[in-house]
Length: 109
Image (cartoon, one colour):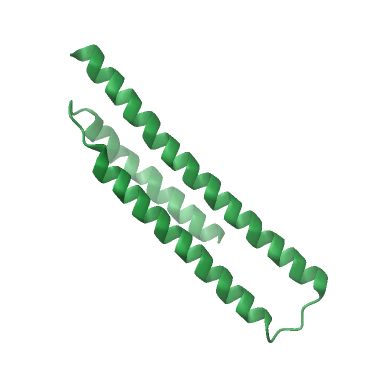
């Protein structure tokens, strides 16, 4: 799970130079970036759910104590919350960049 979040964060950070280069244009279209973000977030969410489903399925044959199972469930819940928060932050960053560019184009024009 942590590798997934690190990979996603790294991909997002690597996409910033592209966004900055495009921000120099006066009429940048954020629709494509918004759509890319949406599809990436859906992929991340589906990957997390699939991973957790496999993890739960592996518990069926394993002899786990109730405490270990509760701890694993709690960790899965934290992973979901962390991904949800990261995705919210990504969406907010995109909205902030949109507003910033709109402000700059209004001031320049």
